[in-house]
Image (cartoon, rainbow, N blue to C red; front, side):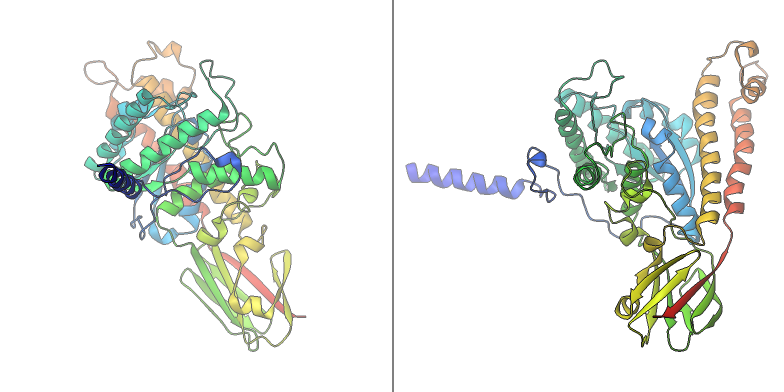
Length: 458
């Protein structure tokens, strides 16, 4: 009997091991000991389709218009052939139940074909995990995904990020920073389960941000704040990690272009989105209709996109503008692109070098900034459109025109139907007319860039 019981225990243990989901590989440092991040599913193919209308949904971290701006600018200049358009729907303090309640009024009315979500930060209530929290989050997140699917939209379900310290403005916050991150990791794992069940894509924000933050504190400074100076709202470094998670989950291949040069003759060939204007030994001039993602700044600063590029494989995975030099006879070559020069061995050039990674300031930088500025202007209006107009105005916050200071909203307040009520469709139409030139300005800013690469033997 004892042998039978032992055998049964062994069998049950074996079944339990088989049933347990695989985990992400963890760094060996004790800092990670309590964390059990389920292995994120691999991306399978390009999720985006030509002409997609992307809705970027989330809380105050989304309303910061930073990771959402990175995403829209990237989609505009790096993969223009897809023709993806974007709207940002961030709402400060929001939880999954809050977005579920407003998504029809604010988001689905614009018929998105694909959506990203980023909730969980406020849902976890800044306290140790409780089943009550997890059950509500799981239920409402599933309902959001199903609502998007029913409306014909594909979904990239994003996990929450991590926290760096206890938020001073949350008076009910409790536990330790580790407790909060364990809770957020738990919600992340739930998102993976929901994504699998609903057959949608998953974007892992938490684990890359959590591990990158730890690495940066070891590499750069103990006070490097990947989750932001307040512990919750990331600066540019953390925001790039977030954007990377979503863009990667969309299945983008990161090939911005390849320039192949015969170093002996100077003849050059290029891939789609670029054309050779002229070429001769030592110099090629190109016209490009695809840009690399441009970011300069302090590599050691948590307020720098460039810094995050040293912590995650953004350039390697999503931002490759490759120069390949063949038939080189010299030991090494100086490559000048714009105002900067780099030296590469003949072997490096033969393999191909990533100009986007190596040249922080390059001939695309100014044009890139113009597009990025236009994206910010549009997304800023989208916040006003959704929060102040579709909600404050349409839901009756203002009783008389005298209550309204903003001239645009005061003008919209006068749009009434035959019954004297606010004419919702007229208001939507009027705000779309306001947004349209802002969207057009992005397209107008995105112009071909002519640039020259000089290659000199050393």
